[in-house]
Length: 98
Image (tube, rainbow, N blue to C red; front, top):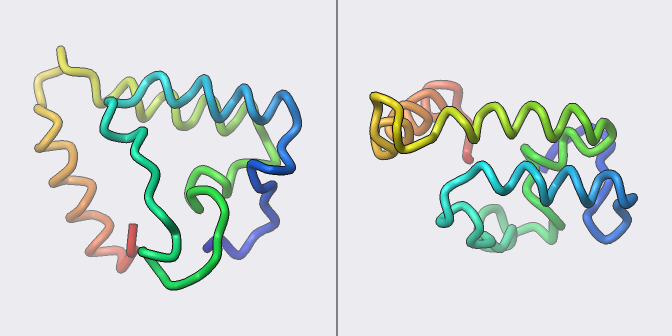
């Protein structure tokens, strides 16, 4: 859970809903599978913390996560599993749970 103020999807403005939806198009289909927050950290949290942490700035949310999504494209030199291994290693070294 993020420690900053966030806007849950159920309270999102139309602009924020569009930002959430539009940035998701850049990601592989597997990323569309919802992970229940209760399964991750035994809390009742609505929305993914890392994406929701940008919810006060919908355009920033869109551009930041769209950029990352384009870095996962299949036509780039690294394969998706290599991106995932790098991300998992960095998260582990930073002691992140996601």
